[in-house]
Length: 446
Ligand SMILES: Nc1ncnc2c1ncn2[C@@H]1O[C@H](COP(=O)(O)OP(=O)(O)OP(=O)(O)O)[C@@H](O)[C@H]1O
Ligand SMILES: [Mg+2]
Image (cartoon, rainbow, N blue to C red; front, side, top):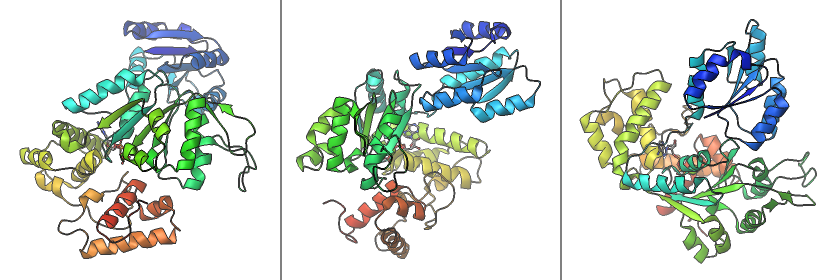
């Protein structure tokens, strides 16, 4: 753990510093925000920055954000004036501590700053092996290809790699290559200069530059068109990018992680994915097993989600009945962890019992088109279709027609259609794949 103190706070922190040191924390102290910024530029591994409220906290926070340095800021002051506290929090500090701070609060803040934001729950041997490899290569700058079915946790693993790397305090930026229309993806990734195209009213940095010194996750890389793949290859090889309309290349230092749920090797054989790019990305590849092949994780994940959604909704954490756990073990979970998460979320909200029963877990989501219930993924995953013949029942037909009509009225813009329908782009693509498999529409594959 590392703590940076900015400003003339040292005198007030003697006791808190002792507690932090006793817990193995390393402490650095600088008098001026400029020197603090310098420290953070050189070493992004500070877990917490305590800053004196006499410093210009808004400028300091702005400089951090402009340089894409991620730091947990806590303001400290004599505390008599609430205005100071409000200004510090508005500027981006997560807390305002009156001086001298309670050492236990400092210890708790350090603890929470070092805890990973996204939890990674697993106990199966298969996942232990994947995580061991991920952690082995995390500290390098190697590109990593993360493969696995939808909902297996590819993004979670990507964040885990970033958090275990020396880039941890810098930006982690994810771009979903399937969600952004082809025509916009290039400028999204590489940025553009003012006037590069009609509508380019100002210079805009692309995600490559925004993630410089950090990590760029290219989600669903298989969906990137072949022309852009060539530009991406150059960016990775030469470590420089060309902004649209720019006259000179810009150096970048961006680590690339990519995910796919398609067989990229097969796509290379069909000339739909560049083989040289595939080899560049695939310095290391991690294959996340589907949930049905790591059943040892099911009960643990279900408990984790029951606890998470209980807490989020101010409900007591309930455990699962024996029968519910048996049922969970038997399901095939084609939507993988996301489907298990949604099913548990729904059970937590709807169950009236003292424990979550098999019936609660098997309850089907209500199939409505406007799924505006505020839940992150909605509850009607493709794997949760009504039983019977999904392609032929009336509700499925109505849904299919509404989905196809929305795509037509959105002129083929899948992102827009998905947002009008209130579902994720991934869910929309899954639905289209299913309609193609059932023969209702032509296959999306060329
Ligand atoms: N090991 C895990 N522990 C806890 N939660 C997990 C784990 N793996 C995945 N999740 C949760 O499951 C959901 C799906 O994970 P994620 O988005 O990483 O999957 P994905 O493989 O990227 O899916 P997609 O292919 O649809 O983009 C998320 O809500 C994530 O937090
Ligand atoms: Mg994903």
